[in-house]
Image (tube, rainbow, N blue to C red):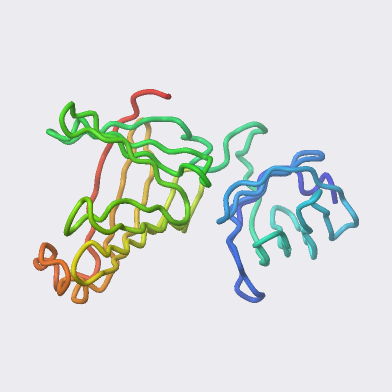
Length: 252
């Protein structure tokens, strides 16, 4: 089985067993592997136990492995990740290529192309526990540099007072492939007299040198509007889509 699994496998995930994570892809070399999943990226060493089982050194187990032609199915058990998945071999993969959006674009900066917004930049990092993305404005009077990680981020309250209360922004990766990154942000804001919560979905994709961002407001805005009057014109909209285009400039 060792030679049969070597390469990159892209997965869809099955709900037939208890699922605590999502597997995006796994790359096997002769003795090492890289697992890209909803909890991040894991690299390590593996050992083949049998035709249907692999031990991940100090990490976990991949079992019930079935490889047929260019298809694979398996069960995986690691810390905070237990799931079953099936997928197909990426025949275009070349050993050493990047395998996920954050790995391919880590430490790149993208500048917005819209007129009057050229001071705005966005960047990404593959170290998601510390930094998932950067939001930067280089305006000499109103500039800022914010860093956001996967899970909870705390910043000063936004809607009803910059210095009073705090906003908790929780980032969760939903989809993560080579050319596409999707994450949800739940914002809980207690800076107003009545705290409120709202959900956003950010979707990033790349075409050539251009980064495209689609922002969707997913919350029930009828609830939010009673707390934040600024959103009143969105009362009847359940999903608001905003498209942003940015151009890659350099690496940092």
